[in-house]
Image (cartoon, rainbow, N blue to C red; front, top):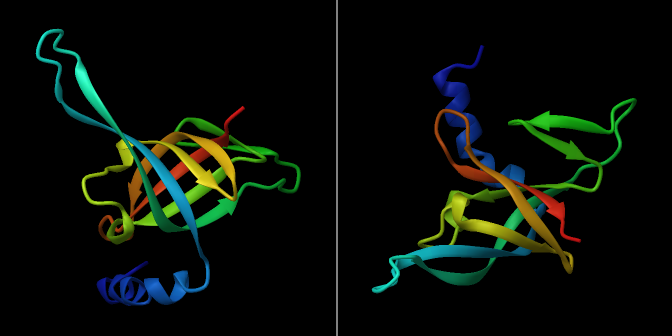
Amino acid sequence: MLTNKDIELIRSTREDVRGNRTIPIILFSEIENGKHPISGEPIIDNREDSVDAVVSEVSVRTSLDRRMENGIEIFTGDILIDVSLEDMPKGVTGDDVVKVKYVEKDYTVLAADYIGLGGFNRVEFIGRLTK
């Protein structure tokens, strides 16, 4: 069982664990910026922001080539993207991110979850190669 001291140790060493594992990616976001004065439809601003992230490419596992995460099937070729909340662009939430560019390929964001041990400290995105 994890104790509060264990959680504090994990939090304090998080950046050491991320060291030399991050890579720059580009987050493409759609942010609502008010309503159209006549139609009332949302006005959407598109943003591109470069951030550092830990990216894991889903690869074939022994006798398992897919898994479920929050109701989404994860397949070989999908990516899991981990962005520290400190690195998220100001004014952008995980729900605003619709696409990611990683090693010159575009990935559609299927889901974004705030995660962390004993409190949220990062956003994990699931990306699938855009065709």
